[in-house]
Figure (cartoon, rainbow, N blue to C red):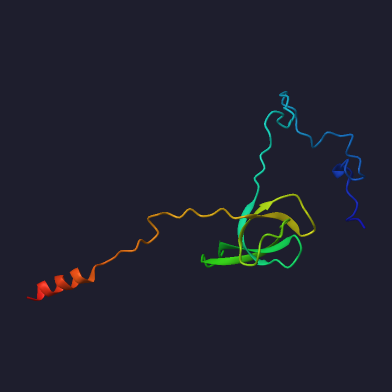
Length: 152
């Protein structure tokens, strides 16, 4: 019982919860007035909208498609890249997307409990003319004559 009682020299104002009257733990004021934080009034807040691209895997529901998004992640221990797949429910108001279509998901307000994305047609990739193969025609008669000249 004697361990629970403090000697009179070590008594504190916090012992019975009466700390509001003393300023023992407050920092001394250096005389400099601290500015109060105020939100900026003229600068608008920028919110980045999340967009993803994926493949439609299910379109059986009305005005809803299930889109599978594949991303590449790095393993924290082995430092190897691997694919992660996740399915999102997206709003398709016109029921225009079918299974296998590539769509772009745009973040919107919550439409239902699971739908917070809007399905949009994915932008077409630009095809470079240099990447497309052009057919090259070889005249076999001139090729055969070239081979026969080298033999003689």
